[in-house]
Length: 270
Image (cartoon, rainbow, N blue to C red; front, side):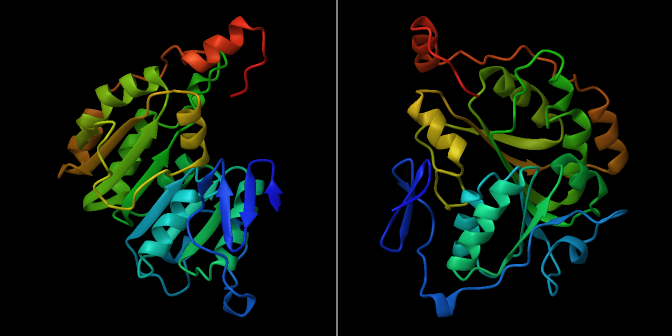
């Protein structure tokens, strides 16, 4: 049974691009009732403003969550931890809310909005983990300013993380990886994972639909496991001021798969 163009349901298991989506669909009497996705409240944001009613934090943040593969993976494995997933695409969040409901998951709260705005207004040390998988590289000329890992975003990520908090980042863009490799160490202890190396949190992968697509296209995945450095706010701000902007030249057609399609005159998406 097909759910959408890339998802198939076989029994109680959903498959996306031939890879199982975390969790199985439970009997209907075991379904949960997740709170509907909502816009971010105005003003300063506290844990209680964006997470479950009884959440005290620190939170696991899934920024640009897409259809929520990582949030499902983490929430199922760690039911005692509160999660917040945010994306600007409400359709993705509707897919995720349905899957949370059908799997009986109640420790994820969904928000429609901008990830950078969330971090900029969230109170210090509100999160224990921040996860960003395949941030949009914005290939189009003149849109580089919309790239997520602006120096200010990195500073806010450092501020929002609790002591020894973790930032996990993954991209299939070679220029974006160069930028991350050069800037993340200013505020974080950074470990770039080898291709065969598992994420240290033990949750496994894939962590998003884009990862599945990138693997199919033969793209290399660049993965960064980062721990917050113990810096005073003034020192963190001083270091951030020295960071370059993410104004690199993008590589829309860099993979062998995409080059072959371009040579055949086929349309390339994404």
